[in-house]
Length: 474
Image (cartoon, rainbow, N blue to C red; front, side):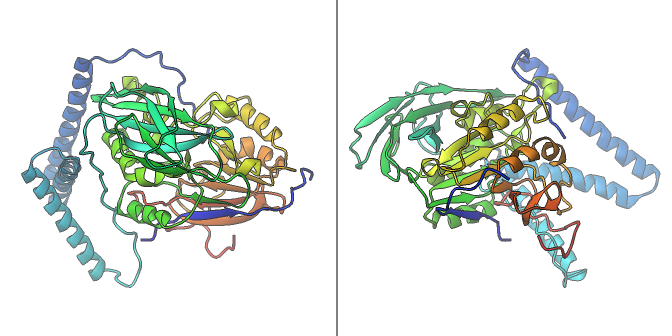
């Protein structure tokens, strides 16, 4: 499998003429914190229900004399337990024996799948099996910074974010233009969050600057970590951007990151679906450690996808708790009231990038739509020849996966992008690559944006290979 990424190279050009299902995530946190007893009781009820359901299914198939049905139920139960054992072993939990048995089961299943492939349609391509997770461990002292990533803030500043297991570590960054010679320092804040029985380490955010454009800085977090190096984006065009979506943390992800690491780029844009933690909070930590070598060296500007939501309203967990705590973006600096959508300038204002929230309210009268209208109205195309938009669920999509999921948002916002003469819209969600001509309201239009889906940076779910429309050039 070859994961997709886009390298977007913005060159100088003359200024352009200016003529020319809604999600309702709960806001706030007015919930009562569940007690440990209630959580344990809820988990016990869920497990008991699943066991009872499995027994009922087995009894039904036995009564019907279906040996195949009984085998199917038993296979599903064994497969689930082995997958759980593999996850625990990869995270360094559970016994060696359980991990060995689980991995043996995985090898057996892969072998059976290969045999079925050879015996059936060996001449046709089939979707590859899910790629194993690449879990990155932390083996340094509790005060040692980990999961370091940076993002741009305003015209000439940078936010440094990291995590420490030790909650007493200071939120301070020392930095300078020479190795080991820190001529400036800045302090920030830290926060933690809880999710079921998981409690995060201290999540630090420190803004440094003013910084010179196109300059290399050396820095250290918390007065305890290794020295890291970053380079600020240039003050003018050309500007080289890397765009990847639906990243995850698999061997495919590692391949994508290796490709990016070999390029000389200025900034990375990610339109949602980062870690694929999906409520398994330690996977957020593993993801942060996996991307640190790149994310600590160049700004990573991200927006949320559906896999960041992690909402469990029954037990009182609001959506995007982990995402908002770990990946703080410059929404306040762009006049946005939510970390789920924001904008920023790059290359000294020659490019304006809008990061929309597919999972924040977007309909007429919503805060996001009102903000977008104000933001686009403030862009002077005479000094900003490039206008880019990123969002998660694509508005135009001929793939069979996720058909129509971006339609409500398109109907609510597309006219604003068209009137502002947006150049290109990048999206993820669909695990494939697709590029449309310039389009508006489902018709080719030379004044509309070009739409590009770039939704497979390496996530565990693999490629979406089937298209609803075959043979059309777009």
